[in-house]
Length: 620
Ligand code: ADP
Image: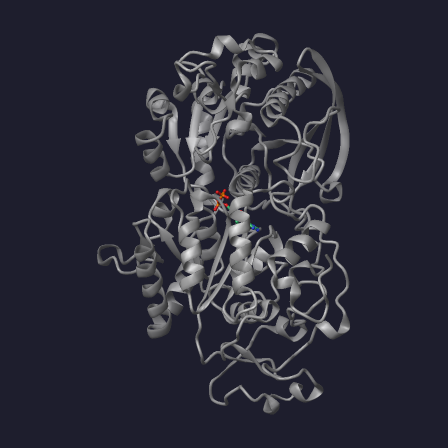
């Protein structure tokens, strides 16, 4: 179905999904095309340079005096020169504003070179299912890219090995070159496989491309192939590549269940062949998926599955006594890796106390460490972000107001007198209506009932940007989108868009993360970097990064609103307090915005802890 121009039809969830699916890789958990958008030109009637609010856009609007809403005396000067060239969007634009053309200068961010170098350099190879921005579904992609860049800038040699998903757009990779053609084993055959080398965001990446059907499809996950077998193949193909090329890193860093089979393959197969030097580090980003695996699936990658069906090795304890018993690739990875990390100190404690893997983790406690994730502060930087209509920083927040106004206009949200742009590029910010933003995968872990509750309850402004992998959840949110998206205060956008996520963080006054559990959480950290005050449930990494404004015993750290219960009342309590601070304590609020922007959640702060772990297991 075409989205009609001249109406705001694209705001209906159906239309959004249909238009986004036409734009190949920017959908759902598809590979993000964020740094190389190929968009249509804006129709001249759909964009305005400067426009008064609440009136037909005519030349008369260009005069500040003609604006019927702006009040003299309440204006704030906009210092941001960028505002002069802002093309204000509208919901009737043929092309939604987040699909406009952006400067493509930073397809590949240079790795910062001015960081102090570590004395003892390591070679680290990440073997991963995700990498931002080219194959990102959630935080895993961000973390791999951010950590790799931080280690590179500290003087280490880092490579990332990634499946060459069909959905990755090759033009997003610079210097893409075929480097090795070899065979890797699967189900009794040697599958012809190509390895390509390229650079993404300043990081050398090796793409593994089997000649079979693995990793084909329009999204990172959910292709029509057996994912367990595909990732076992990938794990072996990475080791096989190291073997045939004689590359022996100090550390092979695997992530999640997808590459949990690699440590088994390494210690029981490749270490007995020619790979002697590498040691294995596993990061558990989320314990939700265990990599359930049948013995025959493990057989197919060349291991004898029956050997691993013991409690000490990889049997899925929940299936003991069942026929057949299953294996867990994540558990195998925990047992066989030299060091295990998880993504926050609180999540480490939580995983040792609950869940069926707790006993395995306790058995391996001495090699299990919790290190808080960082964010890549070059890629997430409101002062330079190419997706923002106006830049800003903690000392000059005018650009943030423009970003909010831009998003409000672009989505057709009620301006409620807030942030009115006048003809002389000044902004009237006298009437304050807070904007709450929630950017998330729409899965149970993220507190769906609380997100739904907030949508129904918030009378201010709220935007949800989310993608639901589950059809039932998707249709629930579609229903809500149809109900609210034509109204004045709520927008629910059921798409994946890296570009829009940057704009929404910049526009937000508050970022909502009401997760049931959250291993680390990046949304609250990115939100803070963009001056959005977090409202979070106290769990996992959220508990390690957000501290309540009303906790008198910890005023120094106070940076947001925290609630503990999983009920609607608990969320209401946090929302009410946030709204009342925003409205009634503007100076405290402004101070908090500046404070959260200045918190250092960068990888510089935490990459050193990863290096310590690598050094503790490396072979010298
Ligand atoms: P998780 O890894 O569980 O998804 P995190 O908070 O660790 O959660 O990381 C989520 C990352 O994915 C953040 O960078 C967030 O901005 C991004 N993200 C989630 N949903 C979307 C979406 N629909 N569009 C764009 N980015 C999204």
